[in-house]
Image (tube, rainbow, N blue to C red; front, side, top):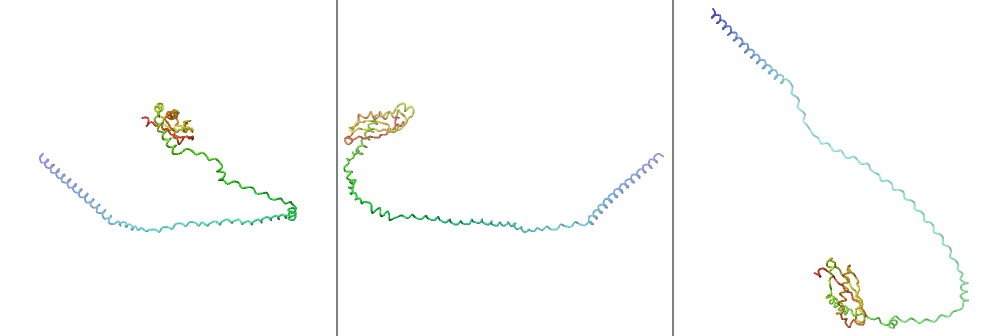
Length: 242
């Protein structure tokens, strides 16, 4: 009894399982069919809707440039009227010339006494005669003899030239121009500074150099009998002192 009930219960359970499987398969098939139908309807709706019209083609046109605006014409302003020329003023009438009484003057000339002309004065003597009457000016010394004696004096004075130590230590340089005067006898009468070197010690040394050379000088006979002067430059340079 118990085994038969068990078999009957097992058979009933198998039937229920088969039924459940069939129901599940049917549900799946119905779901697939429903999805396919929805997709089909969507495709039909898309085909039924009209397609949007294509946009018209774009065309470009070149616009004509606008002409530039006309500038307003500026009319020239009329020139101002020229002032009317003034009429020249009439020249004043000339005063009448005084009438000279000729008759009384002629009578006075006729009544005046006649004075005889003065005798002619003698002409002055010509310039040549006056120059001859004056004494001739004394001629100066011979320029050639003066130049030779000047060179001789410079050569002798150079032997007595000394560069002051104080000038060397202070780097003093300069040029002294001396004026030397000679008497008619040929003796040296004066030694003066015509142009200074800017340093008293250099000026004094230049004069002492000439005085030291005086005993060695001999004025040539061509220069004796006439007073004359010489101008001699004396250079003080540190290059010569070294």
